[in-house]
Length: 300
Length: 327
Image 1 (cartoon, rainbow over the protein chains, first blue to last red):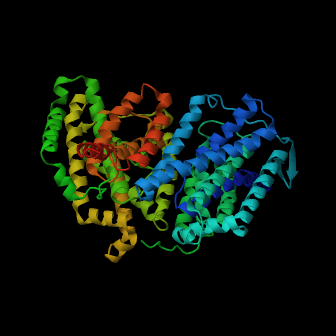
Image 2: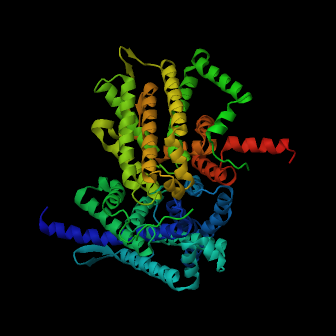
Image 3: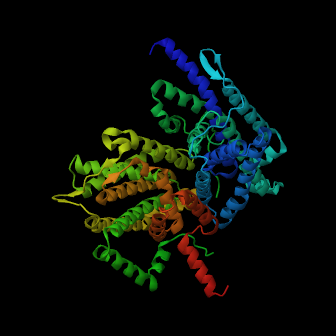
């Protein structure tokens, strides 16, 4: 491969990587915000993302609802589903067994139920794409070709992440969430309603996943297995240290770029291995992640 | 709910009294006599269930004893299947040695992954193995020269010196024997100092450290053991099965084993065995309705976590006790 071509590949890889990376970043953000506050890695995040995509598809394509109804309806459904799962399932699990393992298994159960339900509807039998709302004409940035849709995805993702950041860091609700993450008992003592706070966090995490689904589903063929990209989001979260929100976002972009580079320079068949290799490399070289601070052991 | 949720040797001993003992003897008689009076299909299912018992024992060590996650159980199982089949044929090792080889390879890979993943948070093991499971399935499906790729590999009959095992009925005594050996091994591990250190780590990392237990080492060893046992189960599978396809070594299988352990009751060896048999039979019935399979597995995981976190048997026992006390 000569230098000229390598340069073009490099630019294309970064441009495409930032686009798919913005989806991984959103999902990683959704995972990390739950982990920070509940210590639970939510294995159902990918299926929540997938199911939200199908809700939107169902409302828009099959029910012919106008888009300005479909978007808020999808987000509201994702919020409610996750908040109710937290309130009615996980609170019950936490009541009957103290160990974290049980909560994690419950999220695995949710992932299977969601996948099974979507398969039952049969919408996933023929892979389809959500109609694009933004034109797919391509534009050149440097020597990389991207579509208007790509730019819209990137822009929307960054806006959502910035809004969430602001909420988490500068509002009273966000402060309550961070307090719960640091020490739930102390947070409760100063008047945080734990149950409501957890519902809100899980709900918001559902909304973020739904946004990710709405953004990417015009670009991919939707199937009931599309939730497996959560693998890349987990990899992104690990790259970012797993408890840092900016880390999750940067990790998402890093994973997106690495994935595209592997596809362009090595082989598209090797893409499946990219998340595992990325996790492995991070664990070997910098196990605390790019943004993870020192790990503190929780007392008994 | 009673206050000791997880089996200690004391409860295990108590379970071996009176009716339980009679039941155990009866089960043993049925198990031994099975190939005499049933068809080949029943024996095939019995073989398969025994393999799942061993897979569940492996998962039990890591999740039940140590409170860790392994999401790549099916991958270690697959490594065991391919490694022992190839060692038996290509290198012509006697099959029991080939099975040990399969277990060793799986265990070594497990130790490597565990040692890397457990450098930070313990939850990284779940995530790293999740990714590793996917990666291995890809390897199984693409490493054509070893696994015959997506076409699946024909496993030639297991060879014990001059004898080739050609039927399920022929294989059954061996499968049963190896399964009992693994049960014995798991009980021995669980009652040893090592097993106690696993449970100490599960109950409290800080308290375990204060007792002088190397927490990280305990976790890595438990994960490696679990991988080795899964690999051994792979070798047992090769005793009677003639064909392996990478599709059956994916996350689906890991979830199946996890569901079995959960149904039986997390943290108890008897639960892992009972869960493998009960849910193994249920899943065989569920094959009739594949479109509901995922929903049912998922719902079982959620409902058990919500209402019967100690498993089916403990749940039934509690209900009986409540009924006796007239509540």
